[in-house]
Image (tube, rainbow, N blue to C red; front, side, top):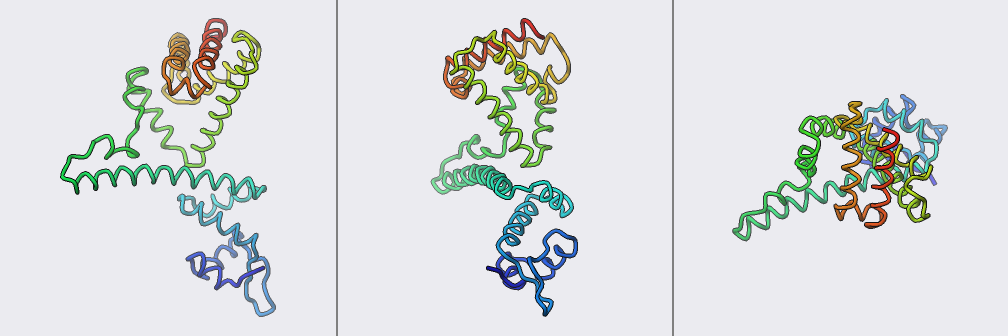
Amino acid sequence: MEWTIRQVAESAGVTSRTLRHYDDIGLLPPSRVGDNGYRYYDVAAVARLQRILLLRDLGLSLPVIADVLNRQKDEESALRDHIELLEVERDRLDQRIRAVRHTLDARRSGTDPSMEMMLDGFNDRYRDDVISRWGERAFLEGNAWWHGKTLKEQIAWKRETDELVAAWIAAWKDGVSPASERAQALAAQHVEWLGQIPGTPVADGDRERSVQLVRGLGHMYVKDPSFAATYGGTDGARFVRDSLHEYARLSM
């Protein structure tokens, strides 16, 4: 199955000139060129165009898009990554839609809308907690670091975090000791993960405050129900806490 350049352009909402430009720069060559000079695009070419348009909408330049596509040889993996990008963007927009709808509904009913609901999706929800625990500089540097990431980089960071959490849960379910080599390796990885976040004592190389941070986080994982749930429940969170405390005692 294949389509003419005009058919593809009309379906994609771009011009034939744009597609010819993509061909000229090697970003999207047609699957074949007919004897009459017409460009034709098959399913694989249209799938590549889909990825180009998505990355373009995310604000990437054409040279960057070309680099991304050249590095993503596995098309199925690339498509899964793009689905994740779209889902994150959808969740962000859904959150903002709910906030604006809340404001509209409140106005229509003659009541004052909740400030928290109006600004949901626009604010940094952990600002006060981070400042109270680690200071304003930690928040400002960490916030700038996070929002300076591209959406793809944010997803990669979340995936890395999810993998670390999954490894903690697996170790706890396997019944290993917090002092075991496996648990201590995870604790070291956890501390290294913290060190990637600007503004934290670990990133600053402040040993004394790093120990306080790691111990404090361990306690928070147990006491905060949302964190405990992340690690499989209170018992799982206790395992993480005890492993981190042992690492702080022996290795920091």
